[in-house]
Image (cartoon, rainbow, N blue to C red; front, side, top):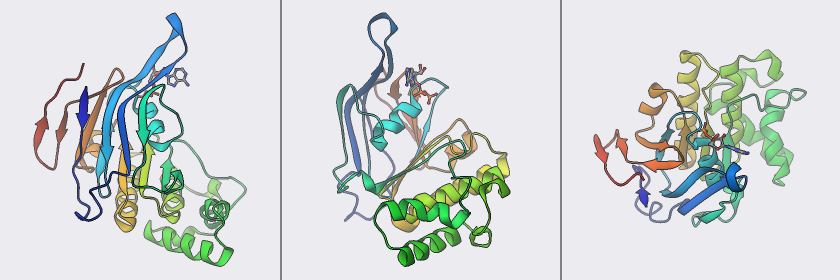
Length: 242
Ligand code: ADP
């Protein structure tokens, strides 16, 4: 079993209860000879204030683990729980590809999940404006997604996540399709968003420059969470990978 913890920057009062906890969580796709164990026995927790980069080669199980943490997939063995949340409405996910609704302008895109959560229009627009300001895009509020660069669109996706005031913010390769300047802005937006609401932040990434900005690294190798280099503590936490 590999137990993975992470660097904690939240206040002691809020960091004693994890927002999400996996115990020996596995996810297998398919059956018999065709079965693929995408995540194998992951034991890990994220606390308010955590900043984690989930790294590893393509196909190592990063997206699957992120989906388990988000509640988008159920584990086929083990457990995933959210002891620090009332429900999975406290979770927001930013994906790699385009995710904005093309017929709605920027502010309307940010408002959509708030309306779906039953928040009235005035409050939803106030929150959307505030979130767009936080990621430095308020001046683009009236634009359509097709009028944005890839980096701007990702920052709108971050604002949309932030406006829901998540306790757990997850981003799956959010800079995978961006040049390095845009990637820098998107990571800054994610960190700023997580700081604003005191959320735990986990970002899966191939990009070492992105990983370095998160502080803690969780490494996936062939479905398993491995010992990792902790940038903040400047040490490698050791433990069995297999
Ligand atoms: P990563 O994000 O590190 O690239 P993934 O979590 O996407 O890795 O995939 C891990 C493994 O699980 C891969 O072998 C992939 O082909 C497999 N896999 C992922 N999703 C599915 C699925 N829906 N059905 C079947 N196999 C899948």
